[in-house]
Picture (cartoon, rainbow, N blue to C red):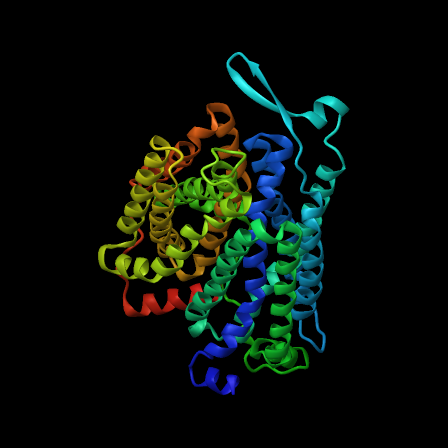
Length: 471
């Protein structure tokens, strides 16, 4: 049935929904991880900077493992398909290590040293015994193993959708997949609140069980052997020629250094400045996401009294982002993508500065987070589209997409540490101000982006649309 729908040019929404369960597992686990593991690390270390560095571990691991595993799965042939076997192994392993993470949660006390006016927190376990103790090292071990397990299958979870969905339907399908990830995040933030009543051990076990249930649903409803691209590959390998062009992208995807070299040689520097803007706003956002629950929680400004409630608060960013994502795209179609992004940046700058000026007010903080989520939708929904539009030809879409992901992933790695280190340096009351600095930098860079919305002929639009769908 799904193949018939595909051949008629219709998107099989039901099938796409079930494929999205692979992405759902990453949404629920990472979101709970990002809002609780950071607070546990802060209890041990008492410093935003080192916590931010450790919270970027998953991105460091992912940058190495995900491309390798994506390539390995491309060459895999089994009766379950080429992606599903890795999704099974990775999800089960990740669920196990995820459930073990709270065994490393401790409640160490730390002393404060005043050095030249700077207050430095040192865990007593460090100053007294010369080490952080078994709890801390257990936490680091489970974090590392969980990150490796997630990296083992995330590329395959992302690649599963285009294996089933034909190019002309992938934009709509990708929206559904991302919605599933967003639902997973909302579930995780809500589950975080429950941890105040059932404990972190039970909370993380529930998260692991949900991951396994999602995996079972995926296995029952999605048969990768029926994926049109997998069938075409098998046919090609058996000597058939039909459909080869559909599974072999015609777009060259050069290495990142070759891509950057090409971009730097451009006479117009719009692409360079949009990439710098992307780096700026992702540093701000990733730093905020990784460290916010510390700032708002009992170990920070104590705006809320429990770690679970602190983790729940980021729902007020996630839900408005999901709701406002489509309107943000519509607005961009009316007033332009660049202007929409600038408006989003200004919105976030204003609310984060207000958050800095007015501290420890829960109602105001919730309003700030809601508006922040709306502003983030204006930025994030339209950013990669501008990068695609800046490509001088369809053949360069791969080059520009690679550059986009390089700058966004680099920001994900560095952002939590940069924001954390600056917060340590200037005091935790400056957290929102430190976040706003990078959105201000991004806004400045955006004023140097002069292109990105050039009107194309119908033929050019069709060529670029096809190229984007193959990336």
